[in-house]
Image (cartoon, rainbow, N blue to C red):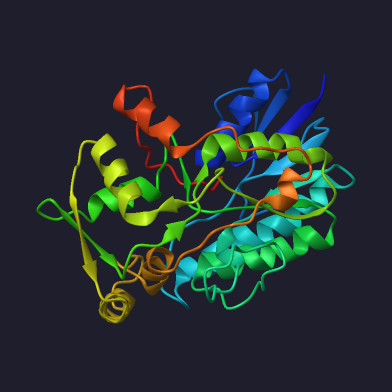
Length: 315
């Protein structure tokens, strides 16, 4: 029987990949600080040492430090220790095993215009520490011959980041968004898990992973808030004003070590710019995204969508 080692298997993406692997009949080894939802647990802190990957035939590396810390903060240094140093140690431990490495569309340079982003889009000028450290780790993974997946704005059951942040920004039944409506690619965690397990046989390189179609920002956010019991109107703030507010929030956060800003320039750009991922390269390998946001919201509305979770992806 084929065995897969999933690092970060107690986190949002890793736990779904581990569970889906078990559903498909694979033996699962969960590698990280905490046990995963299935299989055998092998302890590893991604900040230190090489992981024991057991008898795994291939590896899906999801362990990562996530967040949006102030540049130059201790949190950024910790992020680099996991996302760059942890990658180096994981690749060394993997040896000749195939590796599927979980990256992010945050590695891309900010888009100009509205053309879909292919994997050839420049990887530079990242807007925060997460994007920078993921780009550094990704470069090492690509150099080793790994398959690298680049999802954007992953959502689904147990989401500890995207939806909780949206819900926390609603004030008096209103959510302010920067600029006008735009099209955004999102990635269902179920689509990402499916791609991660299929990608082990793909040629080495980078692959965008996203839902079948992009979503209009304002209508989609209204639907998400309503499904989670917080219906709200959408207000629009000029992008220049939103950037100024975010810059001020970042300056305040520098005076409070260990605390992330309540708003960052990265967050503003994520919502203000239209970002559509071209997934043709993955589709040429026979992959098709089977799930949409509508599927997830229907499950949430019916009580089958899973609770929001505060767990980070780092393991």
